[in-house]
Length: 116
Image (tube, helix red, strand yellow):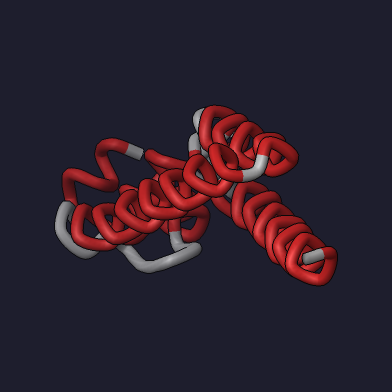
């Protein structure tokens, strides 16, 4: 993964292309099993910076809501655990988990607003 990143440091090889480049180089078709390194090699440094900024903003948002509403703390903790598990998950699985968490967050916010 780092070799692939070093060959294409700024823009990467394209989203979801890690497996295809790996197949060409090694003859094996597999995921990177580290979301951060996989994304770094696929979308490059520029794309990874945007990904990182998005995650930091979302984390700050969930922590702020968690401070105002103790019931929302589980969303913030879930988000942090997904980010930690990203060191061991593929980007595809991590994206699915984040999507589910975002849907749960939206559902929770709508439910809380309907109560008030």
